Length: 281
Image (tube, rainbow, N blue to C red; front, side, top):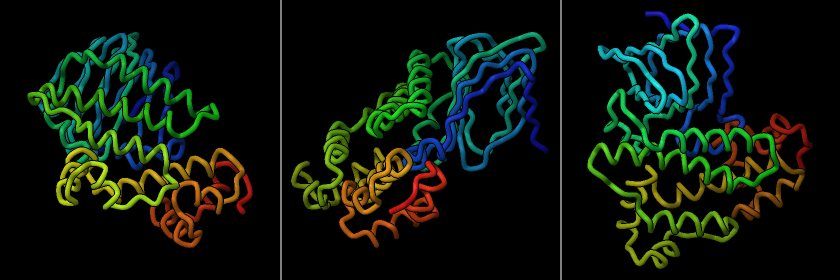
């Protein structure tokens, strides 16, 4: 079946994507958005390898997810798993305001499978507020730490509801504490041994806990955090590339450039030119 996407002229949508927020790639988020739909809107499609969560702030619309049909009303959410055909239809003259996000179906997001396709979401407005604040950050000079905290808030609201549905698995406070410490000092030469000593765990134990919460081992997670911070600095300031590399824990400029290109598909100078127009150093 072909995809159908119809957006009326009175609809307004604000998108949050990986070009605006490089952190999305590291968090396993493909795209998010804030929609104000008026008079006419229809979507009929399915996602391959991705899942969608949409929360209605106001108004209503009809939905069909697989064989399940209903109305999405204010205060409610729908969850659309990968490979499932769905449709959302706004009746003529109707309206719906919503906040939504589409994630890559990686181990970091698999807990969302516990969500039903249609449910009331107590944290939905907080989730929408975090997306709204994140959208606003794109137009400010705020640092990456605030952006990452807002992304983590969105993630926490989503997973909290999934865990409530599944019976209550909690976040790992030790992993969260270690990640905050790393983010506060990315220039430090972090090693697995250092993290294990701080946590009081063996490498195997720490790996298991990081995999359970982040979907990747500790050092892979730290590399991702370093590169996403570097991407933000490249697009928001004119510091020399070598200085940025050192500030995020890459004293060797060649190693930094190689790692950056492997993650973002272009060199640091190319990324800076494309995202800010500043000249590389």
